[in-house]
Amino acid sequence: MTSISKFIIDGSVLEGGGQILRNSIALSGLLSKPVSIQKIRNGRQQPGLKNQHRTGLELAAAIASAELIGATNGSTEVHFTPGKSTNSPQDTTHYEADSVTAGATTLLLQISLPLLIFGSKTHTLTLKGGTNATQAPQIDYTRHVFLPMLRRFGVPSVQLDIKRRGYFPKGGGELYIQIEPTTAPLHAVKCLERGSVRSINGIAHFAGLPGHIGKDMVKGAEDALKEAGYAENEVNIEYKRESNDNTVGAGSGIVLWAELDGGGILGASAVGRKGVHASKVGKEAAEGLIRQLDAGGCVDEWLQDQLIILMALAEGDSEILCGRGGLTLHTQTAIWVMEQLTNAKFDVEELPTDHTIIRCKGIGYAPLQG
Image 1 (cartoon, rainbow, N blue to C red):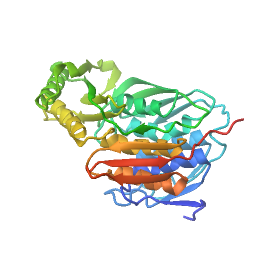
Image 2 (image 1 turned 90 degrees about the vertical axis):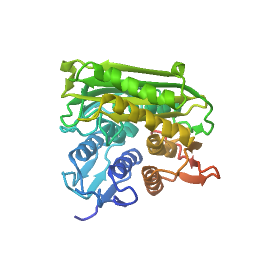
Image 3 (image 1 turned 180 degrees about the vertical axis):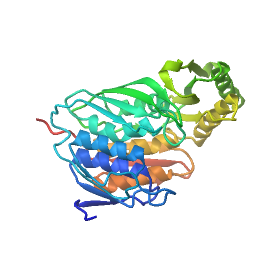
């Protein structure tokens, strides 16, 4: 296939997964930079686009009025040429995407959200597919961890309504999202001081399963947190049983998050699996959160990489304290993509304490007026 794009992105670099695709395409649409992405998911057992990646590309192409070439399942190369600027007034304010499979709705949101948080019109999204899976953020993590941090960057409002949960392997979930955009650059965010743990919250959810499942997940999480030294009055974990007509298939999951006095937020989650007792699922999520708290950062390892594109687009200098153990491969990959397609300047400092600070001088991206 002949390249028609100026910017060539090697999809096999570092983590080499779908994240390169999502970040590259979002930046391409925002900055009106045509891109070719090659060697997509090159190191995976089944290389190339899966259904959920193709669906995300098609959604981004609709938003950016882009020409999209090569977006077929199994394809290892795509070309994305934005058309009408996403900053200008558009007739279409509602977009829909359906992965058909249990492909994650949260990943569809990741590719589309940067394209929709700038401009003068309110946009809405209907996203269908999986809402709670193991290989992507659960939708409750997006709502309670990512979106609060997004607001710190100056996005006026992103309202998320879970119309229907979709569990693996059937999917069938549905989200409705309303986005109030900004016409100004995003704010730089500094999050370097942890402070104390203000509160630990959580939601356990289940459908098509016995009524004790929710209580057991909560108890497993509470017991693990208590054993780790977190007092009962710091912890508030709820459970909710979804009505059978509001889900497709049976399933369960739990998401926990800790709010810090310094403005940071950490999360962790677990998904119910056949043969695994619900209390063990709750304990798994709690142990994940405890690891993030013990690591001493202001954000968890899953939030790190999701903030990189926001830091790159923001105006001014952002600084984020990450936990001990170095940056995740996803985060390193996200920084690499930003450096390929923007003039944002990143600096990664490894502290003697084994913590890491990510610093970024953003490009101050603002939508064109008129």
